[in-house]
Structures are given as structure tokens and as C-alpha cells.
Length: 149
Image (cartoon, rainbow, N blue to C red; front, side, top):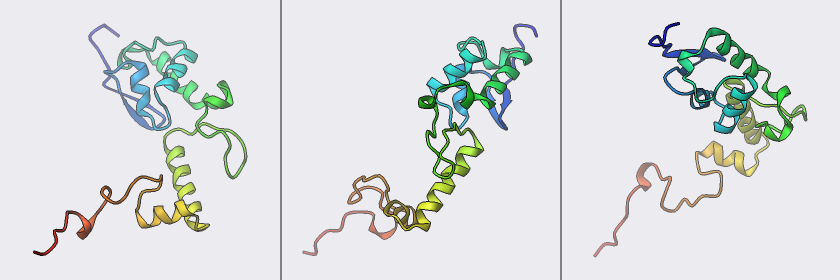
């Protein structure tokens, strides 16, 4: 590959990543991979995190993809995004569609057992204790009503 040629899209884990960005920033395009995790993945794959993802050789990209697939077995439990799964009790790191499916399963479980958070999810209200008097309003409740003179 000569210096001017660049791949604008690099496919990892069924997701198109921006090839014009550095490896560390481009990997954050995967759901479940943040800035710290992407730096760890680049280090484990023995790739320069500041290099452009689109200018890497196919061998380097395949090493990155392999590390992404095997990430939970390569890092300690405290670096994983799901330290104790509700169903299996094992620690795991979920990436891309697995993360989205696990999130949906968690919300559905909360709805099913009728816990407070599940009920808030069902009704479309704020879940994490935010104020709701002035923000998050939809429909006819939006706006300020004046007293009649």
C-alpha cells in the first residue's frame, strides 16, 4: 500500500469504523469499547494507537479484530463491562450487538418483575432519579401556564 491510499471504512465485528481516525479513536465506534478499552486493545494487538486505522495493513487489522473477539480472556475482571452476569454469574465483556441485546434483556427483566426501574422504563420516564418537574416533559405538559387575571 502506498502512502496516499487509505481505506475509509474498516469492518470489525460487523461494524464499519472510520479509517481516517486513529486506531484508538476509531475503535470507540464499537458499542462497548471506550477510549481506555481501545488503547488496551491496540496495545494487546501490538499496533500503534496513534496510527490511522485506514492506513494499517490487513494483518494488523486482523490482529485487532482477533483481540476484540478474545478481549474478555485477555484482561482482568475489573476491566470488563459486565463483571457479573445476572443469568450465568460469569464476568464478560460485551461488544456491539451482544451489548445491545443484553441491555434489552435487562430492561425486559426489570419490566417483568415490576421493579421501580422497570416501571419507569415502561412509562418512558426518567430512570436514574433526575428531576422531572421541568425537564423531560412531553405532550401537552410542555410550557408554562399563567394564572388567569
